[in-house]
Image (cartoon, rainbow, N blue to C red; front, side, top):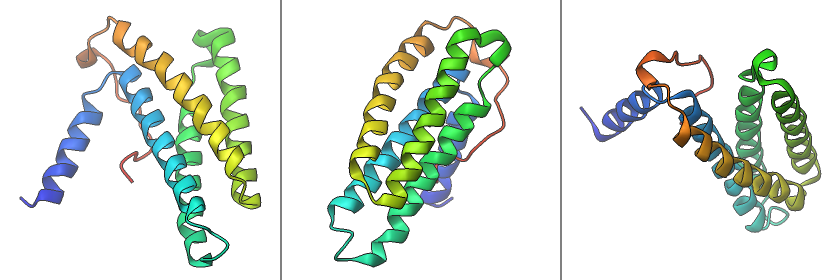
Length: 147
């Protein structure tokens, strides 16, 4: 088994055995990472190297896919007001990322990244205080957060 195959198997096992709260944190981690990578590409002076626009776009689109996955995983019935607020926030995130991508506006990306980092901290607390063992929880179908 090659290193890449072993790494892929490890990541898959990690996702399959994670609790729902941990999965949400993993999604946040990947979205924050991708927005950070887009900002890095932007900082490498996108105007002088237009070939990097595709990479910039790919990172933003991946983070939008992750945020859309977070939106679809909300349980609007059980989540009540919190789920409604998160849906509104996720919608705003995607809008800001879309505008940041079109306008090549780093500030819009940075504001989404900052807010996602704050929410991630809250989700870590939720994941750590969840008492349901991961073996009895179902793993939601969804996005490939590894790439």
